[in-house]
Image 1 (cartoon, one colour):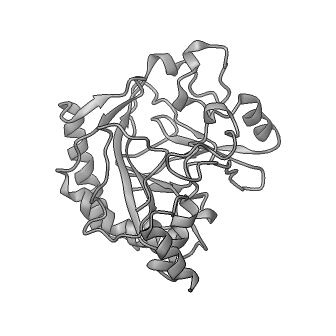
Image 2: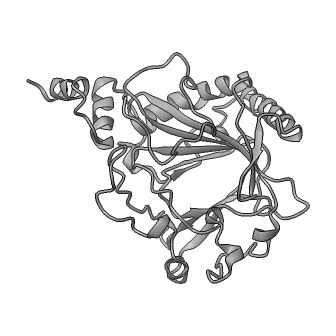
Amino acid sequence: MSEKFYMKDKRTSGNMTEYKEHYQYCREFNPIEGGIYNSVYDLTVDSTLFGLDNGAYTDSYFNIIETIRQKIDDKIKHMNGCFKDPTGHAIRVNDWRDIKELYTLTEYFMPVVERDIFGCSAKIEFLHPYRNVPNPISWHIWPFEKVDESDPKAVQSSWKWHYDDCPSEFVKLFIHLNEVTYNNGCLKYIEDKNGNIPVLPSYRIAPHMDASKPQEYAASRVPPEVVGKKLDDGGQVVDVIGKPGSYAIHTPNIIHRASCPKPGTEPRDVLFFFIRPTIKKYSSYLSNTYSYKPERNVKMYELD
C-alpha cells in the first residue's frame, strides 16, 4: 500500500492525530504547486507576498478595504455586535458576517496563501476584527521597549513580549484598515542583528493533547532579560506600519507584542485572520469560520 493511501486510511479510521501528519496529508491529497515557500514551516514574517507595491492589486482592492473600514467603524461607533476586551485594550467586532466585502477580500489573498505558503488548500479558522484603544493603565509604559515586570500595571499579557505558542502549521494574517504608524497601536516584533526573525518552538503537536514538552517560557511570555539580550546583541524592534490595506502574514510564534495607541491618534483598526491547512474545500473561504463568541481556543484547531 502506498504512503498516500496509508495516510488516507489513517484519516478515515480516525487515527490521524497530529498537526504535522494532517498537514502532510493535506499536501498529498490536494497539492498546489509553484509556491514561494517550501512549506508553512519556512514562514517567519512576510509583508510583500501579495504584491501590493508592484501593481498586482488594483484600486478595487483598496476600495474594498475602505468599505470594510467604514462598516467596521460604524459597528464600533454604535457598539453593534461589538464588545470591549476585558483588558481594556481593544474593542472587538464579533458580528462581521453581514459585511459582504470581507468575503470578496478573502478571494484576493487566500489563493496566494494556499499556493505560496501551504502548498495545499487552506481554511480561515478565525476572523477577529478589532480596534486598539488607548489604555491609561498601559499608556505609562509607551513607547518604551523594556517593561518593569515588578509593576502590576505592566502585566497585561498583550503588551508583554510573547509568542502565541500555536501549532507550527497555523499562520496569522493581519490587514490594516487605516493608516498605522508607530504612534497608534502597531504590532512589534524582534529581529536579530542579521535580519533573521527568531521563531520559538511550540510543542502543541495535536488538538486536545498535552504538549510533548514544557513551554519555552512560562505562559509563553518572553522574559525581559531575554529580549534585552537580543537587543544588546544588535537586534532591533520592528514596527509593522503602513497604509490602509497593508498587512503582514506570519507564524504566531515570533517574539512580538501589541502597543498602545498614543492619546489623540486614530487607533489602529485591523482584521486578524487565523489560517490553517485543510483537506476539505469549502464553498467560501469564510465558511465555518469562527468569530470571538462563543469563545474558542485560538491556539488550536480540529483536524478535518
